[in-house]
Image (cartoon, rainbow over all chains, first blue to last red; front, side, top):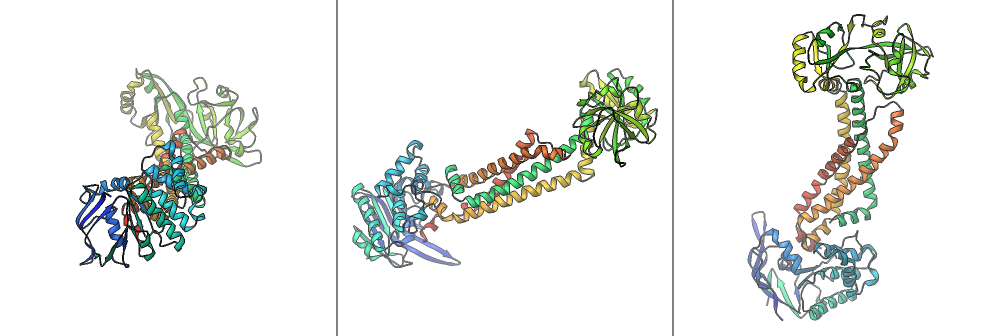
Length: 224
Length: 376
């Protein structure tokens, strides 16, 4: 299990007027290939801020982030989108699918964005939908799908370009427990079978069962 | 990202429809206003542009073609005395009243030309020949004035300013800016009308043709020295002076311009508002794209593509409506000039207006923080 993502003494401080409010304080962690890492903690504990920094969406105030050994936290803002495109797949709490696009088109959009060959866009989208068990919903719009189906499409979208890291923010929050379990199972299987790294933020205690490793955050710090 | 723009617009047909209707309205308004303006300016300068003269000599401080004062026609000899002048011809412009069959009367713009030379003669005839006005009280009327004057039957007799004239020909598509019907007759008859300020021995214009057009400026300079009581202009200068008079001095051009601008603003506002609302509604999706690695420029392209698709659809429909209704508008007596250049120009203006309206949406994207996608 090689480490793909490394955080060393990473902190994030927000400025509110004249006050500095720490959201994450000196967090160090490794995310390894083939594992599902669960980040847990109460609301306001800094989980989402940490996940944003892990995904190069947010820059840390201090500390170092390495992807596959390369330091990325000091890179220029303009280069970060390319890093995200290359290394990460994202799954969001509210699915964040384009309502004007069908299930297959939502995946095609990412394929286009990642420069996939135009001739095989549809075939690749169908392949990914099949992988998440939704090959019979290719031409359905998000409005016509259940929460679980939407989250599986979002997961299929995260797989576009075969990124080494999947980051999921509360992926079960808007699902019933059965659908939530199914989504976590998908993520876990992906990590194990494809040897990819998956980090999931959740405050759902049932998610622990699917995790290979759990990190608890409290007040922006890892709770030992 | 053009693909995403199209998909989004297509999915939200109601909103797309409203945008397109706004642009159709805007296109029609701009094409109509500018088309009518150009049509009127063409009418105002038709006679200047439709003859072979290089130089026009008019009364001092003339404002436009339609309002000429008289001066002695003998000045033609001075013009002809210049070695570089090939020929010089007088032309009369005056006004008269034509009695109608129903007892009413219409004011007409009278052009008196030399039928032997044909300078200033009607250039497009559908009945008779321009030279038929020679040798008596003969006149030519234009087909576009039939609605106001009644049937233009060749050989019919008309009373013009207390004299009887025979209609010997009918021209087509020759209008005046003032909308008064244009009536052609011989130069001699125009001087001989009992009512009017043109009398024998005076003329409204002298037109001159040069042996060598490249010497135009030199000849104009010489004539200005020679004819200090006249205005001496090249044909192009006279066209511009007439256009400037009707456009700026009378304010007519400005009113057309303001209406066209209003159309553009309404169209632009509708597009801007719809695209902005669309962008705000899809903020979360755009934030998601940014989080997943899309660059701002890629999202800008989507928004600008939406604006451009709306512009092209609205413009195409608006232009089609205008082209289809063109003949009905012209048949109603409105001089409408829709040239390919105007149509292309309006496309650029409409597109630019739509794209600049999308700018506010683009600004919103610029400040969009992708972290927002993790906030539920």
